[in-house]
Picture 1: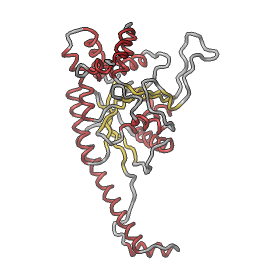
Picture 2: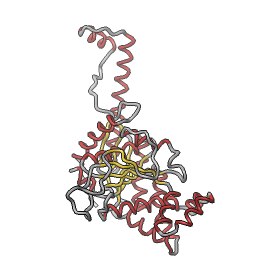
Picture 3: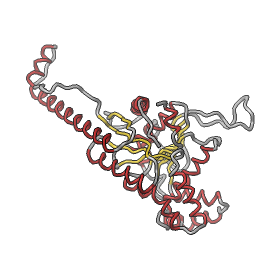
Picture 4: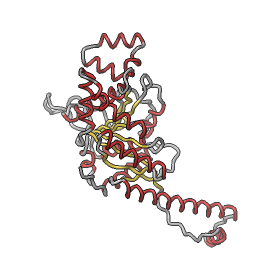
Length: 355
């Protein structure tokens, strides 16, 4: 499958999975892959009210691109140049040309509420809420309100992308909450829609539900690692999201799969010492024993991961992408490029799900 065709399936990709499986890493890799193929991508992460600038976890994404800044509500450019407002020789009214770019921001309910009030001519009210310290209270007073505020902002960005507005991204990658919270997060708009009798809250909920349930606008990317518990949770999450939230599942990404290493099953410490000696090297018995034990563990993990990938393929009928295990304590630009190349190859052999 062509990379541009993959990203053309939906303008918003919601990335979720069990905590610790690497959904933020996958979000960054998806964004980098889009930019590698000439697209502009915005990665949006969620932040608690008032915490966007105080959450160090949001710096993980920027570190992957070689930056150290913690994400805030305002967009920052992680890759590519700032979009020009005018182009030499172009018509004044024409939008600037598309440029490969990765931008990122943290979305929190309170800042989304302030922007909503500004857009609807209520700046004075927003200033009073901020000065009184009641902004967080209002933004979270109604169950589901924080989710609808954040998703409403995503919807606004998606509409701008659909209209081809200058500066709007081609793709929005939403780094959503971990799987259990993601179900509630994506269900909240439908719950508010059923509960609200009318007014702006119902209108906003209606528009967000329309975006979430339209596969040409929004699809979900599930992330798992090839281990029993994450795979089980991915399968459960997939069923709940389809049944309760009405969203379309795009693909499942198997993250951190060990590269296959062909290791002899009958390897012994004595044989290893002799083989090293024949090549002119020196290996102690203790060192050889440790290497043989490591090889046995690696083989066992490979077999276990392969079994979980087979189980996933049999029980979850979704196209599957894979990312290799990264042998590095920190993920930076070098590791990001390696993972992006791996995802690029995986997408090349990817077949879309029938909708």
